[in-house]
Image (cartoon, rainbow, N blue to C red; front, side, top):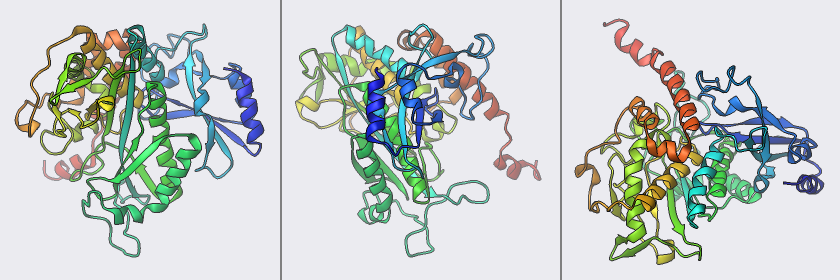
Length: 453
């Protein structure tokens, strides 16, 4: 990391008025600060500091008690390390602005344990030590909703162009509806090119105003997670430009499909060959162990894939394509782990569990931890699920938020791959959120009970 990178960037972008330093907190929420352009040089020299506790904020931006990073630690700063490949111009601000992703180190230069990006680095070291290299790609589902919310604060579908009617049909893969939002997706595409984010395809999903955007796979899982995190910000920024709200909330509408974040993963050996092999659609050797390891690890790590109260609205057995069973299947989208049809080099798993609200770094870390657990322990693969997985297996993932957090806090797999201190901090954040959520009286309760109870 040298200041020359910053100097060269500012030389080539002399009109920049603001630099936005961005990091991802434990919930996947973008946080950071704005600075004058010259601060970029200072940051690349190691001079940017931020409070360490800013990584363990709850979804409302408050510091969760019990993490050990506030009063007990003197509310210390950490050293922010700029991520070189993320430095670039962003197009959705009103003035010329640059963006730079940052990661945190402790004051002694060691990795800060509560930084989700550092957590993924920790998991990747297990693969590196075994001379293996994961390859991952992420897919994000989201809704474009009207910026004008209903009087009760609920979202509503956008109006159809040239009409006072609002979108109300499923219209899977409908090109006309894609065309209606052409300006938004043109802005997203231009912004992706500007930031070198390899968004490959966009499609109309299962609900009004719902879309999916897919990223090309990357042999550096850390870069792939960076790109997914920055893509979510980019989509929100471009949607705002055009008068919409882009939401990755997993279940914004009770009667319509939820938003997922699917992750594809394979593993290369030191020669660059894919170690995942199929024979007559049956996973062989290391591939079979990796899948079973992922099936074993997922219930313990569910709180990463489904981090919020609303996440569990999506995980309802048999209601949608969100998986609730521990199952795998060849070209089977009802299973939690799908093995897609692909050539040998692209043989991989698709883990379909995570909601779009999940932290991309943590779902990448959780998925790779499960795969590595299988590669290490070598469990025998359970039978393939053919047909409807919901009808053949118990809904072991259709549990409560509290149960999922409890399983994570007791998980030996989580402790091994994520570290005891990180799991403790994550647990404290979730406990604080559950306490506040459970103590809030909802509009539905007033409507149901105020007069009639």
